[in-house]
Length: 233
Image (cartoon, rainbow, N blue to C red; front, side):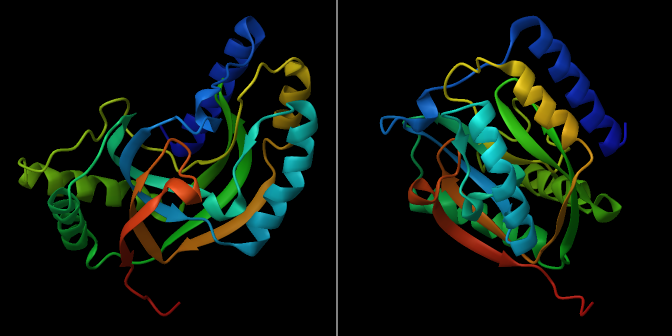
């Protein structure tokens, strides 16, 4: 299945769910007491053009689904791999974090920039996402390389692919934190932006972070930064 086919599948499955059950929501993510933490490798979306497009869309989302958590544009990211999934009360020792950082440094040492075309809006029952399309399936090649690295170091604990195998390059922009009373207005936004060009992003660095559920700036700690090999293009 191609990435485009996968996004189409997500879109259609979500429509079926919403038509039957409506959108779901999670109030926990906006509560200060939420102590779910994990370890993640991410690529940040820093394109000013993309930020402008998303901020314009936020006005529509806010009217259609008031109270939704709208990601600050500085927090927008692609999850390369969830290394240890978020769980309540999870903590990490310095030695544990250093092991993960060293493994990733080895896996990423000769990886070049990852180019992503961001086109289209998709959804799950709980959130809205931009659809990212990396060139030449770069991101999944990288993911497989990292998986192989962990396979060679079984003593390093991880939960990679424990919930699902990560194959997309989506960017979550909004999460529902209260009931969506007018699903039709949200679905209308989805339809109008289904093929909308949001912009392009070149990932020149990746970050290893400890993070809460939404990777909010105030609760996300940068553990290591991995510059990707310059290709001079």
